[in-house]
Length: 261
Image 1 (cartoon, helix red, strand yellow):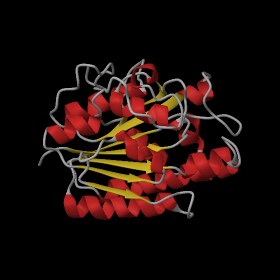
Image 2: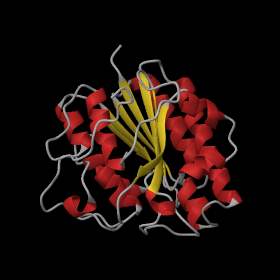
Image 3: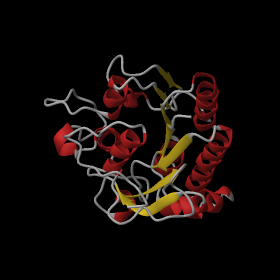
């Protein structure tokens, strides 16, 4: 069967939040994946700029998004969804923060669902369940799942590394576990974050805000292998494209994450 990819992004999840949240699935997840707990995001370490750099594999200075307000790119960089759609791949988004709609351009997605985290509670569980149902019935090649409660409910409302924050991280990991256990064997799951945080904020060039985990579980990524030094959030788009048999765009600056290299 052809390889398919699911990208799960837990907003604001610090590596020490992942390893310290107390969820019993974390050791099993890491032992069966290739991962790093020392990847870096981009500055400013804010949600939309970081996501734009993830999906376009360039610094914010190149794509032009330096706040959580989207503005059209002056010199557009082709994003991951553009590359996949042009290659005939089926893409789907499941998000709980509406601003992420601009990560793709019109007509690049086969399906998208927003469950607004500002309008209801327990959006992480709801969006995960919706994504699982869609994946099992429609078999998209690339699915993006955004889990926002860790940042919104845990970090900003109470504080990073607080009990509430850790509970939100643990909940996101439980959602990830449910997803992984539901997927066929040909799916690779990438788990990451857009940024970390400190106190009740983020956006600074400090380790607490800039350090993120990257965990890849699937064929060729197993046994607790190290993804190596210098991993960046900008490496994720080239890795996804390559795993789906598509050459990364010539303007992308990230590298392909391959623990065998």
